[in-house]
Length: 396
Ligand SMILES: Cc1ncc(COP(=O)(O)O)c(C=O)c1O
Image (cartoon, rainbow, N blue to C red; front, side, top):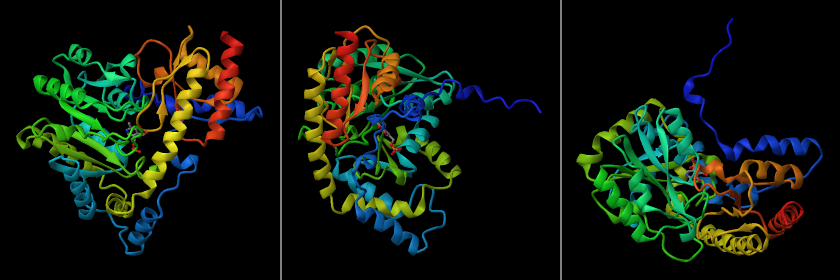
């Protein structure tokens, strides 16, 4: 037999957040310890999935909801998401329950992009968009986030990046990896650009309840009834249940503009049958049930964020903007290094596992790394002590 050759569409797929594991494993095998700051999974750091979500899944299984569900999701879950959208000021045109927000993002891009077409993605931004666009043989075209303005999108750069092959703009708010939350002015400016160029906006709001500056998060789709927007959310982050793999996509905008597009997404949804049926029953209890875990989580994250910003800015050769949402910091390495080499060396030498900034897109050109501030203060302090000593050893 001949060797099986992988498809071209897999050739340019990378996912730095998990790719970095190989280096960590080498250190572990050699007997070294590790401080993991690389994966955005709150459950790995002692945050527990609220019991009422877990109970809802058990109940659904006991009640035999173990068959395939409707492809777009069980009516109870769809209705709960619709009510939540209305509370957020979004007029939903349609709703799909998906296997994590990831699957909704996959449907939204697959139903949109032909070979050679492009979608504007924030740089730095969550690398799933780049991986999916690579698979579609499309292009993830980066737009600049301005570090000096606490990582707000550069609207002029967005507009300059558009050409006749551009189909959409991705907005991640709160952002992964920067933790930035965007102002209403910025969101309105993005909507205006989308309207001028007939683009759909993919608004990823998966961290919208993890707000650390006390200000209300603004759902992009609530600002305009006409513009086509696909809003993504789910149980992974706000509800501390990433392993449930449950998310949703809310389509909004004028029906005559979004109707065909949503129908194409639903075709894809039908072809994969459904998201996990019993776990969909966690959606309504999550959205309508007890939210005390969110207050507790935000309280802990705020303290850990404060510690992170203070400690990072004290380390020579490192500076960091203040994240206002989610649980990521994106510090700048203010010495002349390749960020991937820096991170690999840091892991090998200190065991602190962070992800190189270029894994989140080519911009900015200066070196950065991403870390999660999910661990308890003791583990964070240990990591910062090691990074501090490393910087002094090599660069001062
Ligand atoms: C910005 C962003 N969008 C989507 C996802 C994936 O979400 P889900 O677990 O719902 O697939 C993540 C996960 O880290 C993320 O950071």
